[in-house]
Image (cartoon, rainbow, N blue to C red; front, side, top):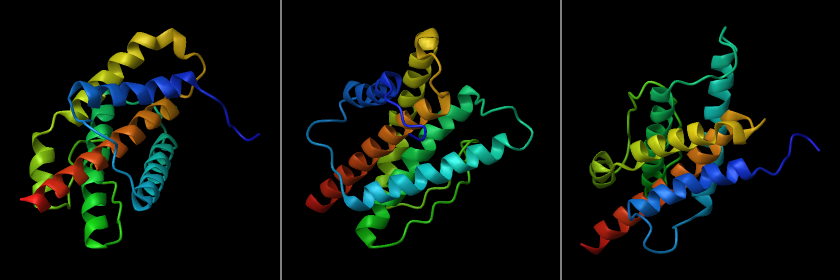
Length: 176
């Protein structure tokens, strides 16, 4: 097998983000999904991982991220979810620019209502804080799990739940 493994740590990283959404009372029913969202998630995550790999090849040893960079990654996938949902409803192609991925200066090209609601949401910041707290608390228990894969498991769930939130905003807007 080529690198496949089962990971309770990855499951716990995902659960950390799901629990965060529950704590913030963002999950009041089934999660909205669509094939377009799954494809967009795959494309985005692959591009982000490639960028981190490229970055680590530029003289840095491994992919060691500062807490601010981790926080930026959560905000980045949150913003990209707003864009993906906007593009889905407008039948537009996704163009994943990675500007701001690690520095928090993330341009957002999304529906005004989604953007307005997302700017007020504590979700990405709380996800980042909870993830970092979880990671620090688990430390020794994480064993030889790849820290980047654990982070990306959490980021995938942040993206999925952020897409759900954006869809709820669009649906609420349509009901007005």
